[in-house]
Amino acid sequence: MITFTKVSKGYSDQSPALSDITLSIPTGDFVSIVGQSGAGKSTLLKLLSAEEKPSDGSIVIDGWDITKIKNWQVPYLRRQIGVVFQDFKLLPKFTAFENIAFAMEVGGADPKEIRSSVPQILKLVNLVDKANTYPNEMSGGERQRVSIARALAYKPQILLADEPTGNLDALNSWDIVQLLIKINKLGTTVLLATHNDDIVNALKKRVITLNQGKLVSDQEGGTYKL
Image (cartoon, rainbow, N blue to C red):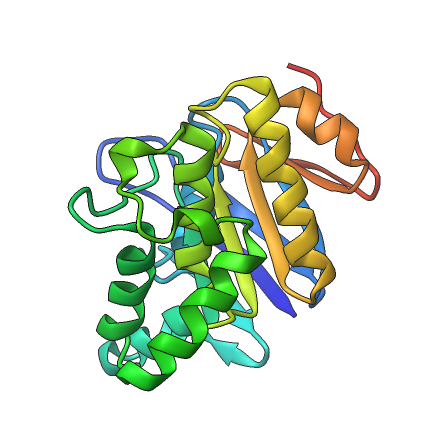
C-alpha cells in the first residue's frame, strides 16, 4: 500500500509542484497519473523513489514513512522500486545483458545471481535474442524494453514508469503498455505517468489527474481528455 497524506512539494521562487496531495494506492494496483506538462506527474514519482523529499506531508509504503528515510536506507528502498524513463537512460557501450547486469552489480548482487536472473528478465520482456545487442542497434521500443528489464532487476514491488512511451510511435507505445500490464498481472504495483489519452482510455484502469500540482480527479476505470 502506498499512502500520500497532505503531501506538498515546492521549489524556491516557483509555484508548488505538488499541493496537499492525499491518496492511497493498494498493492498490485495499476494507476495512470495524467495531466499536462508541469502538472506534477514526474514530481510525484520522484518523491516516491526518494529522489526528492516533500516540503510537507508524509509518504508511506507498506508501513514505512519514506519521508523520514535515512541516507543509508535509500539503496534498500530503491531495490523495492523500479523506475522507467522516457529517454531510456541506457549505457551506450553496454549490451542489453550488460545494462541489466550492471544495475544488479551496483545494487550488490553477486555474479551467480546476475548470471541466473538476467536471462529470466530478458525472457519476460521478450528480448532473449537481443541479449548481446547494443542500444544503438535496437529500435526505440526495444531500448525501452531493456529499460524496463533493468528496472525489474530486483523484482521490485513497485514500478514507476515516467512517460515511457513519449519517444515511441503508436505501435511500439502499445507494446510497452502491454508489457506493463503483463508485469502488473505478476503482482507488481504499476504507476504510469503519461499525457497519452489514447493509452489511458484504452486501459480502462484507475486514473489520477493532476493539474498545476493539485489532485483534481481520482477515478476507477477513468478516462482522460487532452
